[in-house]
Length: 387
Picture 1 (cartoon, rainbow, N blue to C red):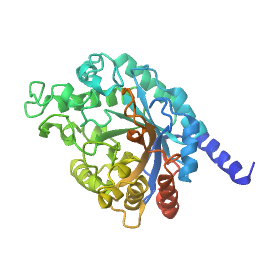
Picture 2: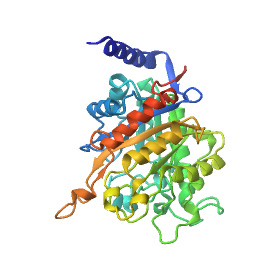
Picture 3: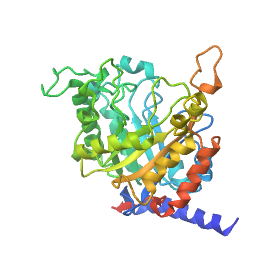
Picture 4: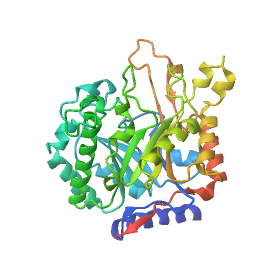
């Protein structure tokens, strides 16, 4: 074993022991730095809940650096118990903070969002799931080291059952007649979960409010009530803001993608107006291979969406000396590949989505180059508040 590996092992062991004994809640990185995280779904997806250590380590090798957090989903369609095994692996084996998407839903399928009857916002508000949430909070507290948790991922996107479209939409019959029922119910459900877990002593959780970069209720006329600002629970219940920003998501998508800068400029301005004192993380970003090849008839436009070009430009703006969005304190690539034609009789591999550094070589080159160039701006060590 080389001296470098020995040193790294000691650092990781020391980190996990310190987390468990003396330290509590994650705090922002030092001034001028951004936390580096990842969703490590890998080239052969195993579900957003089943994060493998091998995939995390593979991403780190490709990116050429360590990680401050590892992102994964806890889908209650698969069980309600706190995901202690995955969280422990991330902390003890990877030396990172677990970042948990708390997914209260009965099905993982997008088309089932409108059919949710168990984990509705109304049921959460009414306390139907309080016993399970209380047990989850107690286990989170017993974990005894920092966690990042979000409820209501991409709340302004209708692909999830907590979006307002599935919970009263733009009606105004619930509480405040000046507020749309769907977003108002979301606000109350989010507050209910945070207050319950804080009351159970889970003070090691950093709470995140996570929006999509564009509002999408999947309706013919995009309604004003679905703007993410209407979902915001308030500063008292939220520690950090988060956003998902994607470029091309499939080779043959029907809508025209945007560069990271174009999308981020717009959403960043809105987030600042909504909650000026809150730090922002890019919880998810990515752009697939294959889009350029499918749009070679527009080479100048499509060139921007080669994965390495898109990601490289994003990292320049996030980490470069200009620091285009100075209150952004972290970023995490969605490192996964999946099949889009899985239900077709003859799936076309050219339409697969692939955002994996392991298999998209211009992407891994871009990450290694940019993370090395801007090494002084990248923070891979979690910083925590003492108890």
